Length: 319
Image (cartoon, rainbow, N blue to C red; front, side, top):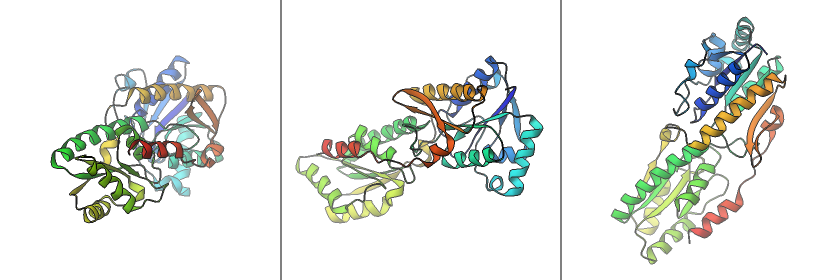
């Protein structure tokens, strides 16, 4: 392995820069040249790249976002655009490609593998919706951001004797809402994996009011319903003033948490090690035993197993 490239694709996530830094520095340590592809697969189509060195990744481990930029690319998925990407890889002399991103990025890697490009993927998404790995890069930072907001909203809700519905990201995966609900002491979490009953939500709120509680926090995953609609229903059924907050893109930003810096660094170095060993079509992940890898096609096909234990614990502790 003489030269490899790294790109970030899809939605950015805190910890991507730690992974980029590790890819570059571990490669240089092993006398491998590194090219950074700007703006994901679109940059691959356009040939938008930069030579990476020690200085280009200095002082980035603590920064959110991605220094390489990220984008979604319809052009890459079309034949003409994809062929441009292949030509650019050949022109640059790229022998291996590290791809950091979520579901769509992994599918792009599969497409490249079928065309003969050696790829290794790192799971970078705040949604934690790649089931083959216990956690994805950026999830814990997003969770921390949500909890900080929950605590602030709780303060003002308590002052005004209100209920509050807080909508978080996650698409069709409720992990951010679920873990934030448990760690933040929410009265209820509403997630795509479990059909909710508005009467059950209202009953839980009223139980708290009976005990003298001055606030109620409901955490809603974006794929499970509309925050405005649910808050209006709660207010109508309980008579309690209910506000809603949509946290939005604040969840993607901010300095990465220590855990995301740690696994980003570990997975970045691990990806390079795989390519140096002539291993390809691999997905890197993290589990109880540390960093591991598995076949990319198998990783993409793993189905999500809902964490019912954590969900039930959240309900029990919110009594």
